[in-house]
Length: 149
Figure: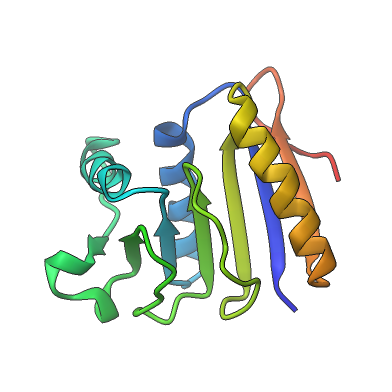
């Protein structure tokens, strides 16, 4: 059964939060797929992961980079998983085709975007109907993640 987590962004944007989540993923020895809503967003995330912090590096790539099966973090706008990832991050409107094929699916959405919140509610309902284990996390005033459900 797939664990499905929802991260409701309030205090920080995706470019600040996603690298931290990906660092924790790699620390656990997992591989990841980051699925974005468009190719343009994949390209922007690719650039952001190269430059998000001067003292850190997150190994990642896209299909056009030529090493998809070997990437610890694979960026895509499709539902492919060439690196055998254990975890899939859904960002910027990406929709899960199914709630299987990975151990964990993480939806990261902007709480200030009404459309993103509505999509997250729809995805919550779909995941619940699929029998997934669901958790919901929201940032507190200091930017820490608090489990709300």
